[in-house]
Image (cartoon, rainbow, N blue to C red; front, side, top):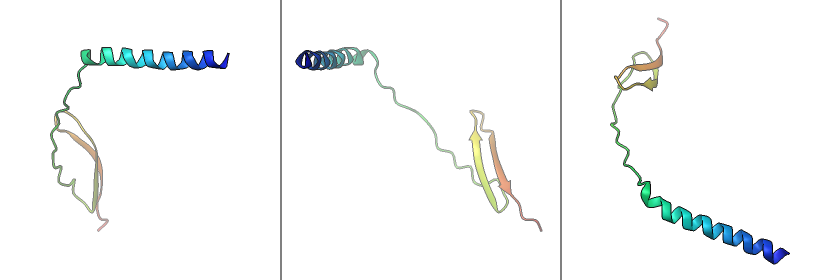
Amino acid sequence: MNRKHSFLGVSSLLLALLVWIAVKPFFPERDVEYTITDLDTLGGIYSYALELNDKGHVAGVRLVSAT
């Protein structure tokens, strides 16, 4: 009984591998395009950008001095 389970496990693994190899060419990997933008600072003694949308709007936090 143990050999039968082992054979079924190996057969299932090989079948899954063959299906993956056969289907992979139909789903080509795409290059990801992005642009790095220097946000400079938001001013103050500490600033941190949290979000940047497609229009270039920045959401973040900044700490200004209490003087």
